[in-house]
Image (cartoon, rainbow, N blue to C red; front, top):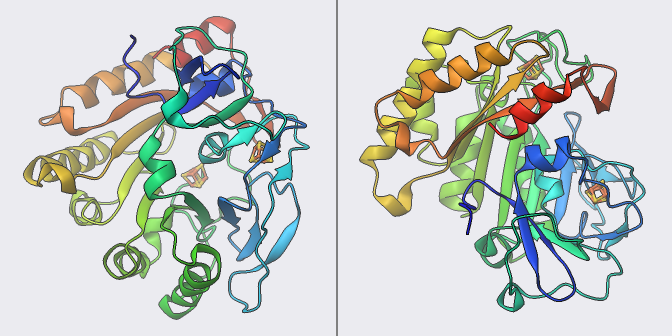
Length: 336
Ligand code: SF4
Ligand code: SF4
């Protein structure tokens, strides 16, 4: 069997034959079309925008459900029918989905692994533990404020001036979701931005979720902070870096990666959070991205980095269309 550790999306046919794929592979190979399928977004997943608006997912299928900073939000109880051509958000691609809503095979029933894509009737995460231990996902764009200004990033996603939300506001939102959406279930909370770590209250909110409420936290960062910040954060949160080649400082970035890897090495194995890196590759920048990947893999304790993948970028004004890549570039990115 192929190494399936990096793979996070599972496709199964009705007989339990299954194949597994990376997010990048699914997007670049256009396997992410589930229009007309039933999807658990809203029941197993929420997306909260930078303004606190609550949707079933970043796709906004099913419409607005309320605002995280208000009480009295009514959370969905039924799966929705997907109306989108493409499912574009990595955590949402991994949500349970079913072609006819009649059959979602249990993971115990999966039988034969296939090296090539099976024709799926349901899709879900590769990790069985994710379903059992942390069945819910909340993706929260905690604010638009970012210290970078990537040329391909739309102003609806980031700016350099938005006021940071206070600890009090964020705690109200966390308590609201914990009590009224999670109820007794555990959730994976995925924070993005803008750049989430530049909010001065971010670390305290992560500690609240991890230490007091016992949820799982993942931080998606551009990797621009000092190593000592990330080596504290990794105690409470998984970390995913999205590297933006036109903005980043390579020396500082590698030092941050090194600090996390060394910190992970010093922790008990069961305390080690996931640390993954995604190098965003603009057209014609593949050699630079491959060189950076090789430099990352040479770091001390690099084996503590769970994955280093290359990823394509989307057009600034059309988040469903990739930038202009040659087929050769796309193949190299997907197979990196
Ligand atoms: S776009 Fe994705 S998350 Fe949204 S409804 Fe469709 S399959 Fe579900
Ligand atoms: S780091 Fe991310 S959020 Fe910030 S400008 Fe770049 S793409 Fe946008």
